[in-house]
Image (cartoon, helix red, strand yellow):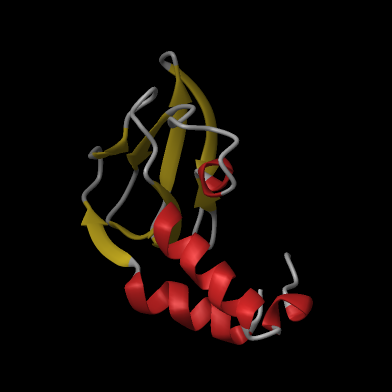
Amino acid sequence: FCERFRKMVAFEAEKSLYWPGQEIVREGQAGLSMLVINVGFAFLTKKGVHIRPYPPKSCFGALLMVGVAHSYVGTLVSTQTTHIISISRRQYKLALDVCAQTGASRHLIIH
């Protein structure tokens, strides 16, 4: 995404710290935010089955940002001390709207 978009989202994002074994979100919980693993590791489980690890720079809940999903698809558990950045759908949409109004949307690049 363009630099302005990233700065707007980062400025408003909520930061949280989770300890090993602590649940970050639970499967089926209403999804309000996309989560970015900033530092540390987490693991996704679904119906008690280990699905995949989430290393630093991973995001979880991206489908919530575009309205495709409304709840978390699995339980995300911290496997070590983990710093999470939470980006709400409201923050995401506001940043997109501002970028679109300023013409920066033509520079949005999704990696």
